[in-house]
Length: 272
Image 1 (spheres, helix red, strand yellow):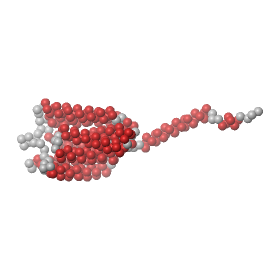
Image 2 (tube, one colour):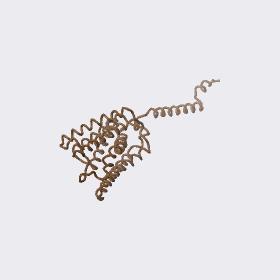
Image 3 (cartoon, helix red, strand yellow):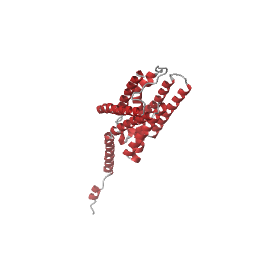
Image 4 (cartoon, helix red, strand yellow):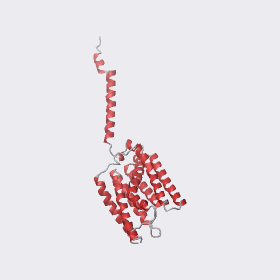
């Protein structure tokens, strides 16, 4: 009689095959979990930016467009010194709403992380940008000292919000979280896979800076030196976010750049 015991031992039993499948599945889950834990930068993709794509970019454009449009209508139809204040607040609301909606859905990993070096870069780059702005203004014949808008020699109603509190306290976080947070991250996330990180980063910087300049041009002055310095500020802040993956360096650049303008404008207004 033939001995088939070796064949039985060699063939894996159904229980063995089930155990192997379970071990393989557990290994895949552990590997995926390990990869997820190791992804600590939104620039590498992942689930924290999966919801920051087309819908978030569209929501940002719609919010910004509505804020600028409704604000312009308010200034046009309402003959009041408070009209510019209301228009400015409407633009801020147009940026805040889509930004809050995006952050409620998910927070890009590492974007809100803060490092002490962010403060150093913020103050240093803001100082350099302000020096460039003064040089450009002087070269354009506008004078090195800016000044606040006055009506019959007096500051208009609400100047403390549009020219003092807004630029120092409100605008830096609101604008940076919108332009360099929401818009830059969504454009980069949409283009990272088809174009690669470098091309996606450059395009994201250009898009966020272009919209930043456009928004300031539509809601403020459009002199050549103002457009150039606004573009330089936007590019600098966008580069900080793309190179570090963190937003607070850009916020600090903006927050240090604007108060220097307010201080110079106060001096320029006094010596007029």
